[in-house]
Length: 364
Image (cartoon, rainbow, N blue to C red; front, side, top):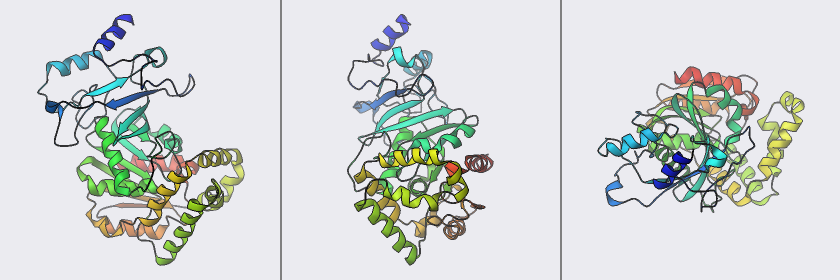
């Protein structure tokens, strides 16, 4: 351990727990730990014209996620400076006493000037999962646990959410999509499957439109497009509640739209926990993100999406209803449509096995 620690320090890859920017474990012994990964100022010969950068611990695995740190990989990269994959200058800050010697599953990565928390798990083709308004990467827990044996999963808290940095609005869907692009760049991922729920599905639409060469396959889950005038009026009412109401009011008022009666009756403690998480959101950030969901509509550009696409929603989802899902299916050439019987909006939580099966079947 001492020899490896000395080598890491000499290479500038390791800082002690007292160093600026170091991150200690953010969970208990059984939970994921964290590290901080920050981009250093590039030298001129490190600059690249595209966003296809890979991290310093990435071997030349085409379209793959950066592998756990291995000293031999880094030595190989140093001996092959002219390798076709560009190498940015990144500083990795890792506390070995708490996190061990391997790359940990949870990271704080600064992209576009914003610190984003992300979780990396599993093995296989890269799969990025994007959460909705007021949620965090944790909302994907039960889906991710069913997918990690097949995919290298990247989940993250969007700007202003969860444990990511709170950033003053206004936000835009293009900004959210740009955060994902920069996060994938930092992780060395050239192309990935992309799945987004609710606002995350809107971000996924924008990502597929703006960065089509970065998407393997696309999954739009319980998301929106082509709202009618009445649907726009209702979502504006909800936006007003979020912007001017008491923290948590919107969540409590939405429970019957998001979960079936049976699920709510059987899981009161679970819903209390979700309510507490929702209420902990920064109100201004929550409102800024909800405004993107309420006022962004990419329906007129859906025909431009070229990625193979799965559109999926619950049969009784009012805000992201089956009419919108069918419209997206009609506009996106060659897309696949699945309407889940009896379910409402929060299908990641209420039916993770169904969602995981749908994604697995589609992404093969």
